[in-house]
Amino acid sequence: MKFGISTFITDQGIAPAPLGRAVEERGFDSLLIAEHTHIPVERRSPYPGGGDLPGIYYRTLDPFVALSAAASVTNRLLLGTGVALVAQRDPLTTAKEVASLDLVSGGRAVFGVGVGWNREEMENHGTDPTSRGRLVDERLRAMRELWTKEKAEFHGEFVDFDPVYAWPKPVQSPHPPIYVGGGEAAFPRVAALGDAWLANSVPPERLGPQIDRLRESAGREVPVTVYAAPHSAEAVEGYAALGVERLLFYLPTKPEPEALAVLDRLAEAAEAHR
Image (cartoon, rainbow, N blue to C red; front, side):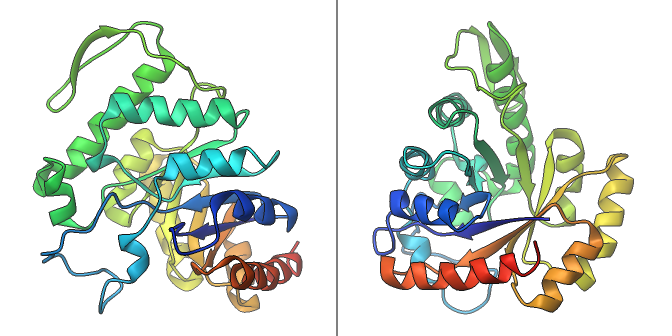
């Protein structure tokens, strides 16, 4: 089983370059970061974690800028979004950003995607929350065309463009892996468009039956990465028994000295199970 880090990168925590270097130096294989373009002042959507929305949601850096900075000081680390909010992203621009990250990192990009929960945030982008699932599926299909075709075109309900040239193409073939976030409602998206399921903080006792249902639905052995996984010995052993491919331990957003201290403890937890 592989171990990585999931976190929010903000202007108040450790910067992306020293973070990426520290994560790689401690033997982790991946770094996946969250995104929110903004948080509306008048927000009705309840925070899925319950209670007040944590301050980190208000201050996230652009993920592709942050990951490019991390790419410049690392050599092996996989660099991904966890998750990019595709319902709020133009597919032509996003396809270029993902491909550019893959190019500048030497083929180390991971495209973690989700539909999002903050309805007011997505409405500011012109997205109807009631159709965001269909929108995300269509944008992902359009991006795959842009990545894999010299002359790409797409004609759908939400995305429509005649043949275009779009470079750079990704280094990875046919494109960077798509890790689909979400619960069981996302399983059809995983089956149709995903290379892996990005399960969010699901404990091992609940994850096992979900993996069975996912693989039955998809008709194949879908790899599973757990985002913000607990790092207790019992939990890690439970995930290993389920055949989970990767655990992403959660790193709280702290200034550099505190963040490095937490990373050291997480690295010890990972090393105990390698």
